Image (tube, rainbow, N blue to C red):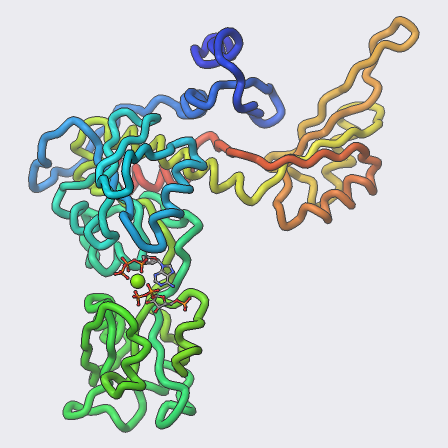
Length: 396
Ligand SMILES: Nc1ncnc2c1ncn2[C@@H]1O[C@H](COP(=O)(O)OP(=O)(O)OP(=O)(O)O)[C@@H](O)[C@H]1O
Ligand SMILES: O=P(O)(O)OC[C@H]1O[C@H](OP(=O)(O)OP(=O)(O)O)[C@H](O)[C@@H]1O
Ligand SMILES: [Mg+2]
């Protein structure tokens, strides 16, 4: 069955093995880095598109992916792609177009995060990686934007309302108390300084704060209350240090949005642009496989036992040893007195990094020895749940 697939044949003959693939409990093979995705990605079915789109997209052959050109998301985005074997080849940091050799139909464009969202909407980009805060603020709920992967595991922050710790705000610790302060009325509304001029007013309205005005600023918002320019600020917070250093505090109910890096796509492009959906599928699978593996280790150990079933039962009696889909148990054969027999069993399981030490203790308790632990590079599921979700969002 394996050798009927071209990539497995190649790795058996010409390629230098770079990865070993283990599919739950059945076989191990090695494949070159270049072809590993193809082994796991099933052929996309030709999907039937329900509904029509109001306008045609611009004609071009390549799929355009927007990546942050600067700021704190830029380096982490390139790192994620590299970890997924999708390294971006950029000749010069000032050159705004680049290639991903593994995805020959993709053209990378480096843009400011907010421009990535704007260009997805205008049809000048098809895919992008930015913070959810940026998608929400500049996308303004536009239905053409689809979040393909909502948790890329970096760029974590929250969009949060903050007020001074002192003066009239000293005893205010919730949005409700802030709203009920007698100080705010039509003539003298609560003044909020923010760069989020779409999400800010929307949040206040949804939370019943009627007497509010907004002023905009691009940076160093935390100075506004002390300067007398604003009563409160609405800005991104990650460590909270900037708020603390400026005598400001967050309040209960004041978080507008929890954000991290996301993969976002133009619905129109996914449906209409040739190759866009296949490319998105490949990127999504690689991201999912890498991110799932980040939290796991492979653990192998030796164990004596009367049969594979008996060893499996012992392993499964321990709460931290169930693995992804149960343990792989393989007999290790030796020749004794001229007879070949299973001397002991090798077990292979995946273990959550958090539960690693507990797992080792449990393995030892049931007779495991020679415990080897190695990092996992990728975990490919049969089909990623996010792919199903995407197809359903596209009515496919
Ligand atoms: N502490 C943080 N402050 C701001 N953004 C953060 C923080 N932590 C994570 N991020 C994420 O990084 C993204 C980019 O922020 P960054 O400030 O680097 O770029 P930018 O806001 O586009 O540039 P500029 O601040 O010059 O306008 C944010 O949209 C957010 O998703
Ligand atoms: O909770 P913290 O870890 O302290 O981070 C929050 C700060 O980081 C961001 O500013 P940035 O560094 O992007 O500077 P800017 O104000 O010029 O955008 C954000 O606008 C906050 O000011
Ligand atoms: Mg910033």
